[in-house]
Image 1 (cartoon, one colour):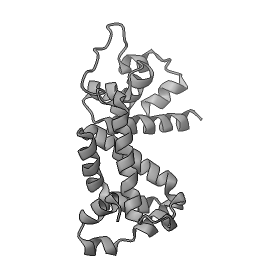
Image 2 (cartoon, helix red, strand yellow):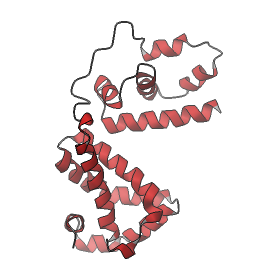
Image 3 (cartoon, helix red, strand yellow):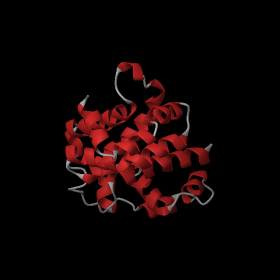
Length: 194
């Protein structure tokens, strides 16, 4: 039995683990069934976060690794092959572990939320950026449809050039939340602009 399978199976009551069909859930994810991904998330995200946190020793980085892992689970579910020997649950936990190790290897993320540079005096606030756009501007109308806090994240990243980690530090938000908000805001903005 692999180390990941051992961790995955020890974390939950064996009777509970056998009542949920991880293989079926992964197959359903591969077919685009969001409820299957949600079921996996509901069952195991806390344990996955714990594993990532033990590796990274910082909650915001662990949250980022788990979020990235679920994106990877969603996009790679169709390629899951039980014939390769790994159980479905071990496959899930291997993804989380590998994402956490990748974050750990990428040392540039270690200092992201600790030291946040002060905004330059001449840097406009997110509100000032939106206000500076013409009232008739399509971009302004689209930006105004996005929740203010999410819009602030987006504008700090793209108008002021801050990294996701710097935005997280500036707004005192978890890094995973900032990344998700920026990603979703970009999608909303793209849809609105089309």
